[in-house]
Image (cartoon, rainbow, N blue to C red; front, side, top):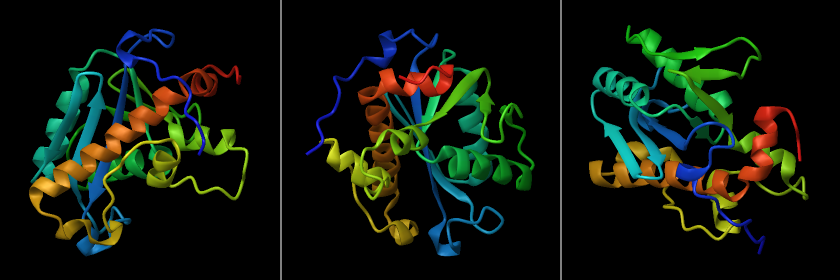
Amino acid sequence: MEMPDRPTDPANDRALNGPIYALDIETDTSKGGLDPAKAGIIAVAISSAEGDHVISGDEISLLEALDEYIANLAPGIIVTWNGNRFDLPFITTRASIRSVTIGLQNTLVRPDHFQWHGHRHLDALVCYRALRTDPTQSCALKKVAIRMGLDPIVEDAANVHRLTPQRLREYVASDARITRQLACMKWRELQGFMTGKRI
């Protein structure tokens, strides 16, 4: 088993001028789930040193509540797992479709460079993929989490819409939480991806 690095406490880690938050979304798999033109967001979780915050329900209300919650957090780093390609573009597309104004922006420094109400973004998947020693090793979130000794909630990703409301909340919170834990485990290395000084 791959041994994790010693975790840091994100609430006290000021190397990048702020706490670490992790974000994960779940989408309507009854409508395919992966295409934001067809499927909506049914739940989102933000994990921090203080715990997990989950928002679910009506999509317009969800997007508004999410943006307000992000805006009120102390400035820090939002960590995702594949957020460059999925979570953040999905959120921006759904907000546009639903005519909800949010503070999530692509800064155009790079096509994958997002900021949200002053929070910077880090896609931990990109970092873990670059850091792995075996290129055939899966970088799927739950597989990486298990390799690193974590205990994620596992469900059939194609049938998330069939979960009970409580199980959905637990599932999305688990994904956000393990994303944050994985970021903490490799934080020293991950910082290099944001500062441009790879370790």
